[in-house]
Image (tube, rainbow, N blue to C red; front, side, top):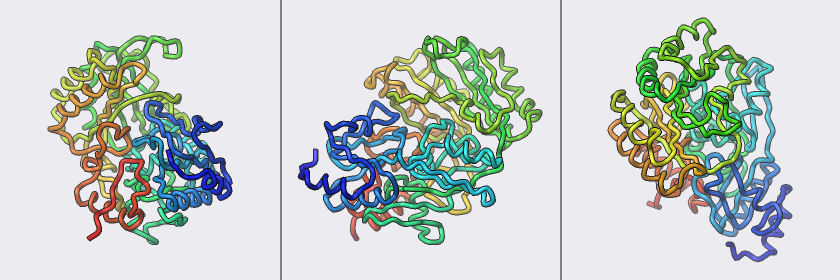
Length: 463
């Protein structure tokens, strides 16, 4: 823990409007805890920021005293925990959302979750490029790229950022746009929290008020057929359709829908912005695979988009990672996934295979650090640690990623959940040129690497 005197922390408390928490004091454990419970921050001090001025004061204090800085809104994407040192800025109190229906934009603060933006945009017939889980923080998701429900039609969420308000390592509040500072604007969108603490963001909204979407749940005996048919089907669908398939064993618990309890299931998820009739025709080949345990694909308001995946909204412990895949041999991919991480694997593995391409593969109007745009699929594997031990899960995941290496093109920052056992994965997230440029910009904006509790980009060496 920090050896700073108590007077220094009292001074910090006087500089900020929000609360300040120290280890062992009331509220500390609640404030440091987020969605990911397997790895948690344990900093020397926490500032519960009430606004951008608090963030600025906290960063300036940290710089003065040599304290590395971590930032957390919901804690879904915790990668490197502050363990016994540093200053954590908790942004959950910063929850303002402003919708401009004429400009088709949303401005939201650092603690906002996507569900707030979806709800506020809907009365205007607009939607953001949110992800599958509405309870995820909007800022960190977007800074990591943002692979959402409408991704094949509109691209990464990071491609549609208008402006970013950020506090840099010197404690300065800055509004950054493509015109005001193109280099920092490029780095923030894809470099996530390496270059400062983002206090708010302005993004594009899209004229989407409804979807033809939902899930098709197939029993274990159909899993091979589902994966094989799904991979072939993705080559035939338009960009207006974004989809994925997951494989998982559902626990036998009362809160699980009765048809799924205690069963290994293939779940195909559909989000299509076209009309319901054409959606029915597009989904027909999947329904022809065989009987479904549940079929919830239907016309829905965009405000119901969170029901497509039904991602768990309660905090829990998990371990996982991802690989981006190019052109794949579908028969080999299906066999590999099921042999290594299927229902007989020693660790419970949740497999998530998402179809990319479309607008994701095209260069954005304003370049960003989000790379690997030639990938055709992303495969994520996640193990709930309530079901399997971490030491058992790790080698299973590694065997799967090793087997997929012939088709692997990189990793997506949004789904790299922990640096706990792989300290530097940024070489797989970025191209060598982008990695070099990010390091050079880091040396300009954060030469002391104050922001290092993350998927860290170290400053380039002087000279």
